[in-house]
Length: 214
Image (cartoon, rainbow, N blue to C red; front, top):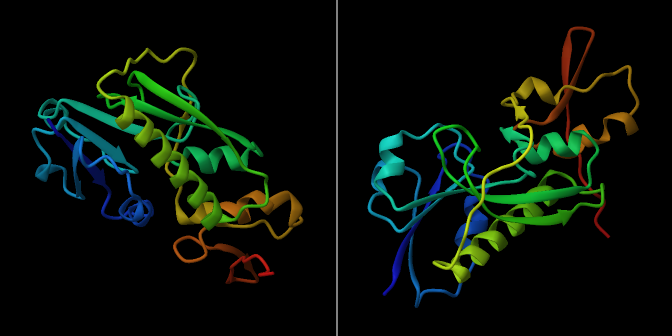
């Protein structure tokens, strides 16, 4: 028997797609894999992984598949909501969690299957942070797929915290503060989609950051 597995991705928030398509799970004898950016095309699947999806899915969608899973880059129930890894980096954290949970009607509140830990050293820029995040997401997905169906879940414990959606204006630098105090903001800003910027004398100036190649 082969299980049907779908990956649901967001049309706009699609940073993870290239990592997913290039990854080899090497589990084709156990699973059939399917990728879609339209939830209406996904039904009657054994497992659905909902990845970086920005909209709330209808309950009817959750009901028409056996198991709906979300990978969230935080130590849930902390940092529910948007951009969990970004907010943690901005708080100067260097130890992080990846949580695999069951999708629920309330955002990021479902039962937990696995949590994995990982670290950043504090020098990584946006592209490197995304690469590490993708590695951890794929790692926890594969862990689940290898163990399935012999998996167990447990309720989230503790006080929940929530993050709001980040917008381009959140990338603004303060010209009266030094670079060191704003380095984490420079790290998480995307050079193309939401670059760092500052305003001076009525003008807006864009800053892009790169590491020296050695």
